[in-house]
Figure 1: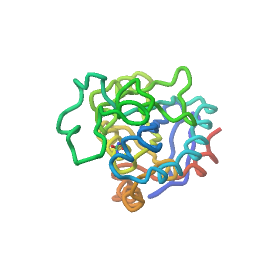
Figure 2: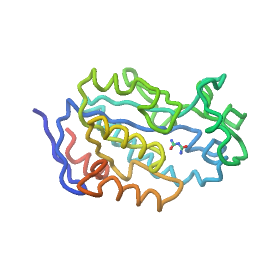
Figure 3: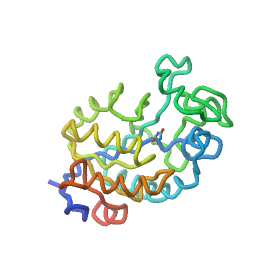
Figure 4: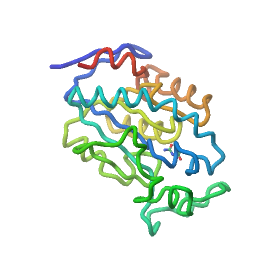
Length: 222
Ligand code: C5J
């Protein structure tokens, strides 16, 4: 029933299209554009831009294949009642969560910086999950939506690889979802962390998931 097999590490990965969803993690202006939260932490945000074209291609292919597409955004309520002080006070960024940045208040829902970048704007019918944490399952209705749609497999992409992508894949894996991670559709401010994250996903017979790339996926999606 509409099963495809994609080349992956550590072994080819087969999945049924009707029970597979694409999850695009935190492709938000605050992480990717100049002046956002990512840069306030001292990161080179240009490193994340490499993931945009492969994500665009995969997003288009998933829509054409009729797959469930979901997006996440990391951020908080304007009154910050859902932002633990332990998170807000972490480190010494030049601008903290909730402070005013060039694209509005950093990581606050409704602000321009919190929005998904224009290249990957969700279309009608694609659920957007607003999450206060790094993992997409924590304090959200993501699992409810996936279970209702009888989703068993997640293709997970987005930023940053070792933070929100990794946390989400681990959460999904523990909940019984099989995760496929196209590496070129993920990015990190630290290329070494990205590379090691990919190895960690696939180690020990795919302990967290299977790693592939957008070209392999585009070759098998209808
Ligand atoms: C971070 C994320 N890195 N989306 N968030 O704070 O990975």
